[in-house]
Each structure stands twice: as C-alpha cells, then as structure tokens.
Image 1 (cartoon, helix red, strand yellow):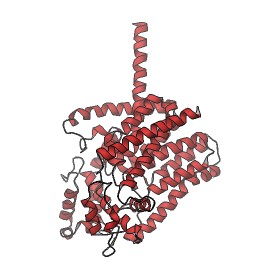
Image 2: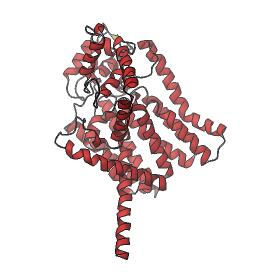
Image 3: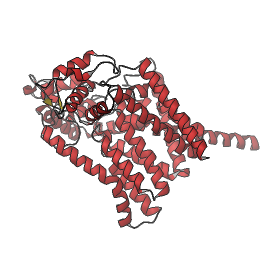
Image 4: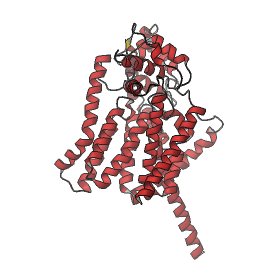
Length: 452
C-alpha cells in the first residue's frame, strides 16, 4: 500500500513538473510582474553585499532582456547610485540572490524553477492526502481545474511574488489538516509555521492568516482532544511563534528602510480607492491606477508635481495621506455603498464569474459567464453544506481560510491574485456541491420511479 502511494506521488509530481517546464519554455518564458526588474536589481546588490538596494541602470538592462532564462544579470552590477528598496518587500530578491549562490545561472530561471518544483510537490501531496475523503475523481478534477494554464501562467510561471500566498494557503491547508487528524506531531506545526513565516517577507496577502488558523487549532485541540487550555496553547505556540518572530523582524526591517513599522508594502490607500472604482460610486471613478493618481491630484494640488516615486514609494507619503482622508470620508458618508461593495466582493470570491472586470476573460464570454456565477454560488453553498455534514474538519479549515480572505479583502479591493491562493478550495467545494446535487437528483428519480 505504501509503495503504491509512493508511486502515485512520484507520477503526479513528474506530470505536474514536466507540464509546467514545457509551458515555461514554450509559451510563458517571458512572464513577469512589473516588479520583476526591481527584484532583479535588488538581488544583484544583495549578491554583492550592497544590502536591499536597487540601481536604475540595472533595472533598465534587465528590462531589455525579455526571456526570464536568458542573460547574466550580474554583469549589470553598478555600485554607485544605489537606493534603498522602500515600496516592496525584500523576500523575492533575497531568495533570488541566494539561489544564484547555489546555481550559477544568473537570471530569473532558478527562481521560477523553484516555484515549479514546490508547486508540483504540493499538488502531489494534496492528491495523496485528500483522495480518500473526496474520491480520486473529485480530487484530480479539483487540481486540474485549479491548475489551469491561466492560473499557472499568472502565479507559478511568472517572475514576481504572487506564487507565495498560494504556497502559504496550500501548505497550511495540507499541514494543519494532517496535524489535526493526528495531534501528536508538533514537528508538523513547527514546519508549517516556519514556512508560513517565510512567506510574510514575499507578499502580505496571507501575512495574518496564521493568526486566524491559530484559533481553529485551539478550538479543535480543546473540543476533540479535550486538552487543557495550557496544553493547547503550548501546542499552538509551535506554529504561531515563528510567524510572530518573522513579523517583528520584518517590521524592524521596514522601519529602517521606510520609517514605518508596517510589515507590508508601502501603499495601501491607493488600492482602497482603486477598489472604490471597481463598482458604481459617487466619484465616477474607474479601477485604474492613473485615474486614482489624477483623482488624488484634484484633492491635493501639492501632488500635481509629485513624481511616481514620491507618491508610491513611502507609506508616509502625502499621496497616501490624501487618499486615506478621502477613503475615511467615503466610508462615513456612503456606508450603504461601502457595505454593498463588501457583499459584492464576497460573492465574487466565492464565484469569480460574477465579476465583469476580469481583464483575462474575453469580453464576448462575460454576458454568458455572469449568470452562470449565480449557479456556482448555489453549488458552493451546497458543497460547504456537504463538507459540514460529512467532513467537519475540512469544513472548518476551509471556512477559516474563507473568513480570512473575506475579512481582509472584501472591504477594499478584489483582484485575481487575491482569489488564486484559495482557488483550489473553491473548486474542491464546487465539486462536493455537484456531487451532492447529483445525489439529490438520483434520489428524486428513484422516488419518482418507485411511486410514479
């Protein structure tokens, strides 16, 4: 039995790995987030002992090379004119630089290959651990749908930081589920906590997810294992202490770099006002970065001559302060619109086709996909009901992750990268909902046949 599991794991890993490598070298070898060139420049500086700094000429040279697997970025190193990295978190640059120390391939390819390997390992683990509960067909279908080419191209095969929230959610979903089924493997809690702590330095989307999961662990240890509160807290400390330490260290680092202790990227209120523009609003704003910048310039004339760096690179900027003031005004003066937007975004997180603003979708399909979104919404509720009735642990684990994203993002902004981390859970729940619907239909047919 163990040998069969090992063979299945290896097979799924190889299939996933080879598929992603083929896609990387044939279709998406040039996928980059807009921050990639900055990540590369900071990695160059860190490699040469210049700390977390970037250099404009390095950025320009990296930008000229379109393929992520071409060139030697270390050739662009310039010691003069380096600037502290302020706007973004340093994790991707530090990791890229460390990979260059190990692998003498001085471009973005080692970083992307690492993402491919990690993603393939987690997919194999997910199948092995959850196929008994859901069935092989549901589990495999969930992975295939959640790992479709669009998602792969925008998270796994892209040079940037969007892979790491996906990694954080998946490692917590698998790791916490394993621990709460066994209870005695504190090493699993420590490992999951340590890996979650690392992701905080990459992308702040999931930075505070472990704190909510902590309450889930405490609840299960007290209710199912009947542990005392003291023993439950000691157990959960294996998980949450690495996260707390990581956040504290990042806060100190960010203060030294930016003058602000906030352990996230610099701009926030720009994203909030962009979120206001996602739906009808009293300002007639649309969800566009330049539109929001122009809106801020109208609110504050001092911003008319401000550069992009002056507006975006500091959390203490006048630009952020201006938008924060207007955001508070929006919430207090238009609470009904604020609450409406929260409901809209929660619905979209559950059923993404309800949103008409996805740039990746062909406009011709939107009129057809929108009504389907309401069906998906119903299927999701049926799926969650099925999990609650038959798989309590999976229900509460899924619900905890959902509640985190609802609480963190429904009130200000919704983009695809917010949904990608828990998309595999969405698909998992949909399939349970479809399975439950099929059972209801089957029962109805049997009753009709019997009494008809």
